[in-house]
Length: 418
Image 1 (tube, rainbow, N blue to C red):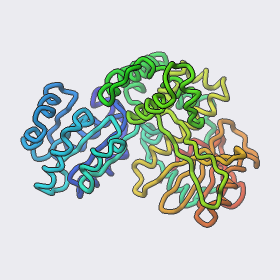
Image 2: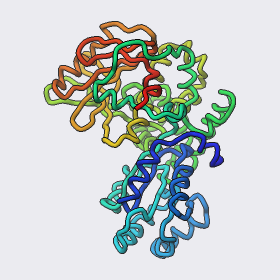
Image 3: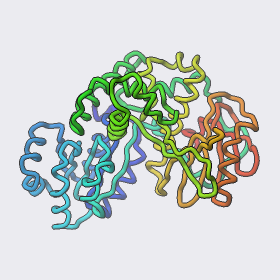
Image 4: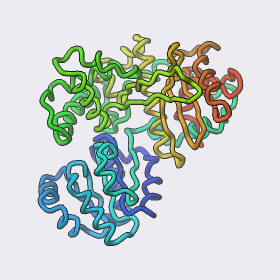
């Protein structure tokens, strides 16, 4: 992707990166390949006089692997190191370099694998590194305006009344397009689908190979497609393993690998001491709905006509959108799902500084009192720490359904200004 292609869209994580560089020696931007990490790191780095080196360059890679101590010692004063997951050997040398001269803003690292899942790497730079997650483009970034939705949610600040336009089929279009800049630059859904499929194949052939020795590499594309088909469902390893001559334990390990390169997310269950009958199984969400639709072979029309599939993929879309909004929010935000043994559930539970909010997702433009059953149960469990329960639907108005419970147009996720 060209620099200009990605620079068309503001990246709201940029301010957080600049802020982190003011007091942290090392800042790591991690996220899936092709989501814009290199572009953003170079934009920030160029403004602050950083040199740039990439471990996708075979010469740099070989040099760093051959002599990690010497490689780090010879680096310029301030440098961007791209795709660091390819050389885990340098982390110890980075630690030594930082300890020898403890100045803020020395290294910007980017990584396409989640180093938090490799404890020895994360631990080696503990106290010296700030880790920030860059996602594919959010709808707010695509519209060019920051979204205040999370602030409104945690302040229970939704004002009842007509405030949006119904999305209709355009919502299915947003979901099917996803958020990867290079895919969005393509003119037709068919061309985007080709990009997404090539993207998944490349990641599996290249990055998974870097991370682990896998005997049945050809099973991974099929497993990823199956995971896309189960998006927004509870993780069911037995069902995922059924088509393969592979053990459940191996499928479990493969899922972990897919999550390490940000292709899938496992959303843990929320629990509370006052509630004994909660389902503990995590929920599976594909990392980007454009990728999910390509793997499932459906376009916006296909999504729109298959309401069951649309409902599930839309839930993953909202979850990913909220994660994207949370990534540049100053206050930390943890994500869960809620379900009890009676199948009463809340799609997404958000927790920030002791406050809890719930978000339900509905693909239709009608809402009934019964749709709030899960949110009411969550509210009763959380009591005074509950700030709001929101049901996102494809409507035009914010409607109150009781104390701190609202039906809210889904478009407020990206049209809700600060």
